[in-house]
Length: 74
Image (cartoon, rainbow, N blue to C red; front, side):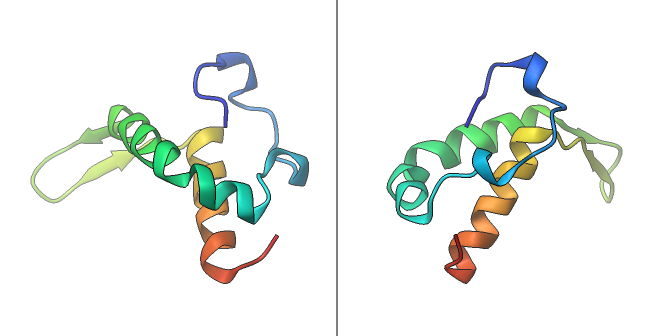
């Protein structure tokens, strides 16, 4: 997963961009805290009951990888 490439931020996510399940499971412990920190910087609190999260390629890729892991797909 690429954390620092603004040029790749809006390139469509393709199956080739996803890690195989076994590799993702091995690397997940290192990736998860970095993605959570990245998501935190992209969240704006608008009051006690509202926050806006601005997704990008990395956050979407992480969500897809998590869904695939949970479903044991890919």
